[in-house]
Amino acid sequence: MRLARIAHPEGVAFVSVDGDGDNNDTAAPKVWEIADHPFGTPNYTGRKWPLADVRMLAPILPTKVIAVGRNYADHAREMGNEVPAEPMIFLKPSTTVIGPNAPIRRPKQSEKVDFEGELAVVIGQPVKNVSAAQAMQAVLGYTVANDVSARDFQASDGQWGRAKGFDTFCPIGPWIETELDASDLAISTTVDGVTKQDSRTSELVHKIPELIEFISSVMTLLPGDTILTGTPAGVGPIVAGNEVSVTIEKIGTLTNPVQDA
Image (tube, rainbow, N blue to C red):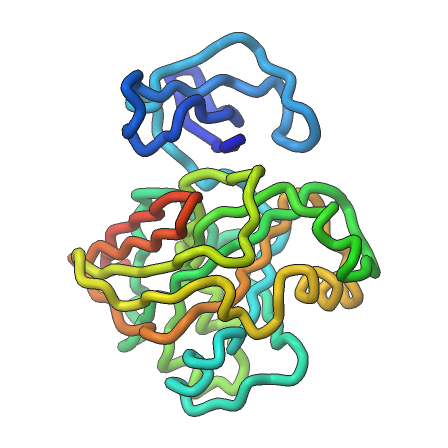
């Protein structure tokens, strides 16, 4: 199932996407409104709209975004860093989250803003101190993310709160894929159609169950909380006028234009 969040003529709703959602079906995809929330078995209202007639929003509004640094060995090397023995985690504010086609706004304070395409894991139930063996039971599904980073502040500040925390610095979407084995998926990023990143999620140093075990030993994970699992090599700058797209096999493509704030 593909779970999404949309703006429709009468408001905002969680929906499931009928069909593949990439307009490859012979029939135009539709979205079906979910009555309450996307966790557990959906309760449908019976209302539906053509996908083309609604605006896709960030598929979830997490209480927190937990990101993992240096979780692809090739990216750690390109940044001149060692691969950490344990997951290196940091937080991005909920105000960084935007959805598909919403603009990434480059802050005027920064001279170097980079894209970082990532697989994101969305939590589906409260979990604390869960083992890796049981961790996947807490997963609602997967979506696509872009861990936008002010690289100059990341270098100068010595910690990453400012560099990773500007408004619009966490595009996610277009939806949450709930029926998926995410252990070996192609992941790529393009800027204005030129491929910059090209890897597979099998290259993750710390795998998804291990990440959930580690993070839940530190903090309680709540439904909707989103884990960014790390970015592969090939990160680079984006400027106003660019369009950046992150694609993950079997999930979809997240595209955002870049503007100056």
